[in-house]
Length: 553
Ligand SMILES: Nc1ncnc2c1ncn2[C@@H]1O[C@H](COP(=O)(O)OP(=O)(O)O)[C@@H](O)[C@H]1O
Ligand SMILES: [Mg+2]
Image (tube, rainbow, N blue to C red; front, side):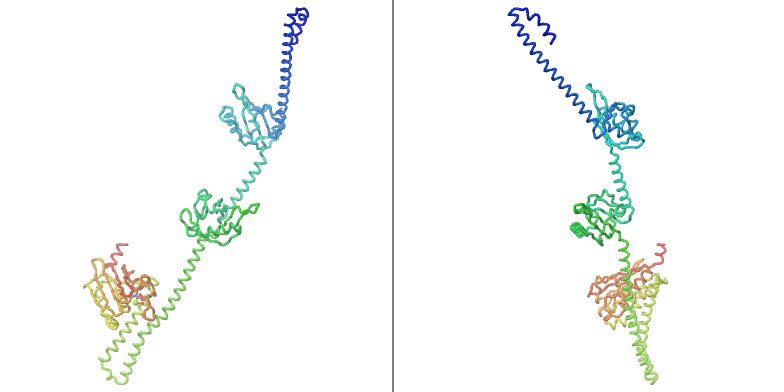
């Protein structure tokens, strides 16, 4: 522009007025142009300075950044690195510029890093970051977290990577220490046999140890976050235990000696004794409750068993004492009339043998015979106790007619029945033979009939024998005091009676012995009764018990 303006100057001196006017306007234009040019030049200069300043600022940022920054070409060669990056790796920038990132990356991390860089260059991912280890020049390993992005050329081609690297060795070490501590604690918790459960304030399960898994058969995931009373407690205890738990939370206190029942996934019930401690945070707020539990199921079961055995032993002792007093009384009762009759007969005979003719002697001796029989039956019962208890009750099978046995017994007990005011109606289909033990059949009928007489309130008694090809049935029915439903099962047990000893004599052994004889013969007995309207005992016997036994064998 200057050159142009100077070249016009001589001409300007030698022109006419019209030309001069034109030249003046030209000069103004030139001046204006010059002014514009100057302004543009000034702005250019300013922007170049601004550029330089921003570049300097950028360089300063790059060099003084708190993290490592580097440019890396697509093959992994370091292009630029800031001082931080060089410090991280322990190399000088010149040394690094001769190396690739692969060369200083731990071999275990190279593959993953290269793969991610490849995907970034291919445009599959916008950026990536990872934790990895570098091998420093001095051979030490350093953990870094890198964040990598890609710079493209204006044409869109990938040009180079920008990598930011932060030293996370300390953080990793702290994490490792924490993990180690956690694993250590978990290992301790898992090896102890006691149950350890961590609950939150609402009773939800936050953690538990392996013993809990073993006991409940639930995996932790199945119970995590669930309130323990809903998931694990026996339903009938839920409300009460929930209340106790919430009280512990409220009072933030230690609680001992609670027992409750957990029901496992397999339905098994466990009795657990707990001790709980509230765990508070720095501000004194309750954070967790730690429950330590011991499975006391076996212990409690054993205690209950011991208590039961003790009770049974006590009952047995009481029964034995009662039995001894009853037995002595029962054994003495027949002795009184025997003694009386014998001494009267003796006295009479000594005085004058003729004073007691046979027709007077006979009924007296009859009394003696009956009482001796009664004594004999009592002694048999007593002997049966020991053989049954020792499991030695033997039966000798021969051909026996049950109808005949029933009729015999009815006849024999006729006197007692008459004395009690009972009529015995015998309906015995004749004959009903089977292979049984005669004396034992006699014992069965005698016991049932004697009971019917004793408890029959002087009303008629039915004695029925019937049967078919395989089974014989004996029914003894009275119309006496009957047996309340709650006693009907236990009267077949030893010494068990449903009447008072004051009103009715007896050992409480008859039905027990009958039942055992029937067991030996393969038979059964049952009772049907309503208090006040009598009792019906029904005995069923296989007619050939030995054949049945053979078939079963
Ligand atoms: N026919 C019956 N009617 C009412 N109660 C009966 C009858 N038979 C047995 N019992 C009840 O069963 C109990 C047990 O009978 P049992 O074993 O023969 O012993 P005992 O006759 O010596 O008491 C009796 O004490 C009585 O309470
Ligand atoms: Mg009896």
